[in-house]
Image 1 (cartoon, rainbow, N blue to C red):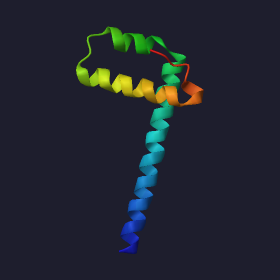
Image 2 (image 1 turned 180 degrees about the horizontal axis):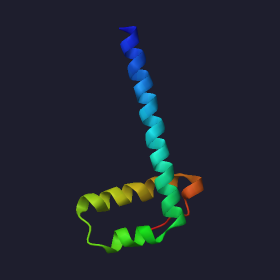
Image 3 (image 1 turned 120 degrees about the vertical axis):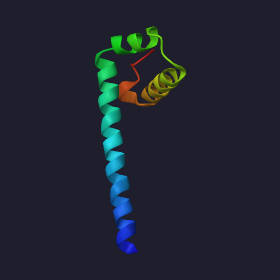
Length: 71
């Protein structure tokens, strides 16, 4: 049972690091290329895409390094 908990712990940490890396890459790309945001907003997006974009931009505003990324 202990080895199972350890594997879950390791898997959780790996997933968190991977998601953190994806977030950093996405925010850096958006900061360096603000036209991406405009393109995403101007194209006819469905409600899911709009919600994802809002979530990303809200998250970016919380991070001091990326707070300059605006919509």
